[in-house]
Image (cartoon, rainbow, N blue to C red; front, side):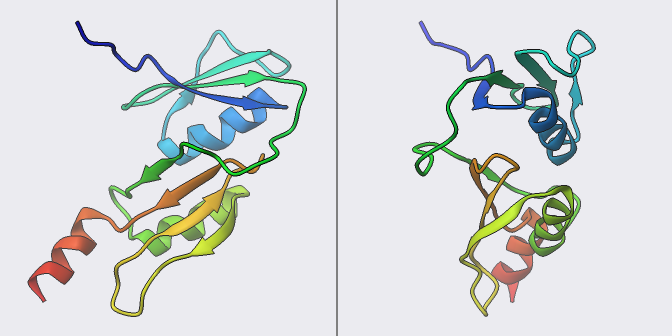
Length: 128
């Protein structure tokens, strides 16, 4: 038997606000059953749904698990700029002058995630 990843869960202090950020990031939507002030908020998207659960303690250390995001219709750099405009911050810039690399970012509550190059960017440097 196998198990299915039902959703990825984030502990947070403000589930609705953080869910709104990730709904924008993933072009998803907050479940119609959820509203501001809820202790659990679900983001539905094309991939694995994201669940945000209110906890009393703040994040204190680096994530042991994080998501690597690959833009579908933008470049990596355009996506990083979009995320910054949504309120994310750059934690570590691992881009190289030759093009490869990634950017480590943090969401509104400090959860780390990485932004990699798009498939088109990868293909362009593979044929160059």
